[in-house]
Amino acid sequence: MSSTARNAVIGLASALIAVLLVASGFLARVVTEPDSEPASVTQSTSSGGISNPTTSQSDGEFDGDLLAEIAGVLNRDFVDESRVDPDLLKDGAIQGMFNSLNDPHSTYIDPQTYALSHDDFEGAFEGIGATVSKQDNYVVIVQPIPDTPAAQAGLQAGDIILAVDGEDAENWSVEQAVIRIRGPRGTSVDLTVRHGDGTEETLTIVRDNIPVASVVTTPPTGELVDENGDPVTEFAYIRILQFARNTPQELRDAISEAEDNGAQGLIIDLRSNPGGLLVQTIEIADMFLDDGIIMKQVDRAGNEQTASATAGTFTDLPVVILQDEFSASGSELFAAAMQEHGRATIIGTRSFGKGTVNHAVELSNGGAVYVSIARWLTPDGNQIEGRGITPDVPITLTLEDIDAQRDVAIFRAVNVLRGEPLPEPPPATETPTATESATATPVP
Image (cartoon, rainbow, N blue to C red; front, side, top):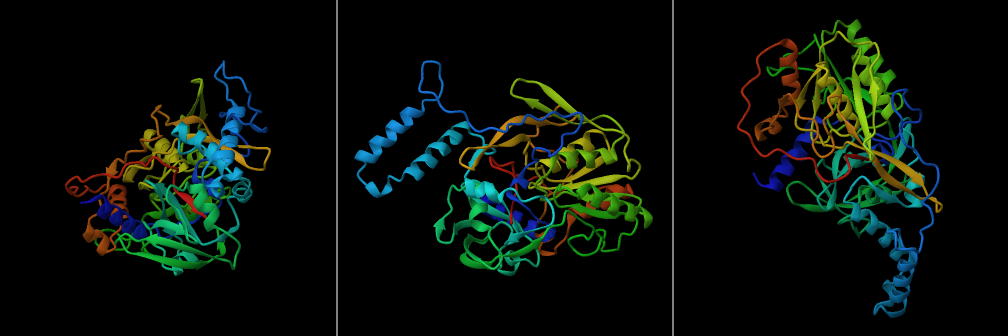
């Protein structure tokens, strides 16, 4: 199957099996620095801006005067005077520094974007209602939220964003796309997209108020059924859309209700979960574990810190976790902890591979730099960044599954929880790999 066709299949599959994804501010794209640190994790922070550059080059330090000198030459001599814009030159120099790092998770955030990034992981937001991810040279739609402006306008999972309000979006970062797409309720944005079948169109989307949720208990198809189409009543389905501030309590409530209804096992769906808050991610993993390491963090000097489990609340119920190639960051931390402690069977495709610790350092101009400061490791010390979490039961969707809207991952989860033998997998095909980009990012 060609790469284009493969992407189309992935987009269609995501549209069928990830229909309840929700979003918040753009910093939800990763596990962010906690608002209060867990006792066993120390996260480096910074409250100041970037120090003033020195003019000395003898010790390898940054020469700010040289940049100013080059800008002066361009301003005086460049043939197209209209293109020598000081702000554009400044932004280009900044972006060039980050490009040289070859790290898609470190970036400069301009003041306008950073002002919008303070939205919390709760309540509601104003925007179109979709999530995005960077793939190759473009930002793509991961999933429009049902009954939001994005879905109502015809935006589809897998759509490539070619332009926003007529401006070419090639080589945009996720942050650039977010700042241009989101906006106040009642305003509109024109998105030119390329669909999975290769057709292109421009959609005018009127922004609205989008409610935020983090836990839902209704499967994408509306009812939990097995591969024969029979209702499944002995297990509970729970989808964690992101790790928001209130997610632990929402999850406790959902599991308690499931237990009251006689649930003998849990299907926890992390498909297209982009991550969220670190403290809440650790807290949720701790619910299912009695002891042991939940995650490790290793900084640039090789110093290792850990977060460890205490006595859990839901340690008896069997658990199956569903993931896909858009499960990233916090969802990968949780899945890895559950997998390596033998608490869950992972079903789906290899996850995204976002295992970088980031924090934002505010600058004097009101903007910020978003910097990778460490790596997350699984309890067994395995790297997540660029590798992702390998499922115990791989799933390969066929075109027939997609056409019939068969949620094969849920079928396999039911098989596993029932202790039934799994069907023979189809012949191996090319597996999507984690892209060199930021993880799936909400677009409010």
